[in-house]
Length: 120
Image 1 (cartoon, rainbow, N blue to C red):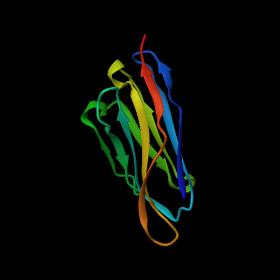
Image 2: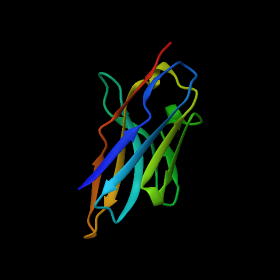
Image 3: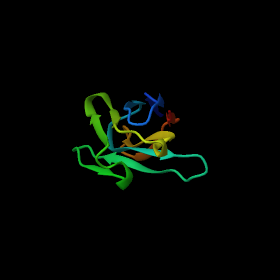
Image 4: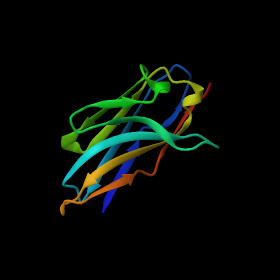
């Protein structure tokens, strides 16, 4: 089994910054793509950013230039640096990973989510 544990959420004022972390643990041989998604109240969960093992990144248009995704492959950890936060960034942020287990099968996992609230 694999667990994804997020941390770093909280309350921040507009214009502020937060850094989210997500550590994967358990039966892991390797991890392909990792990413962050978010879900605001009354809305569907949507992409924030993804990153491949090699470091190629993809961002939602709404966060380009403000958010930066990165990963530490040795630690099976993905990060999301969020700058210039806006009230519309308020959501539960979820970590996602494509994990290859020791038997060579790939499964997709989600973290439990961490709340980010941007408010004055």
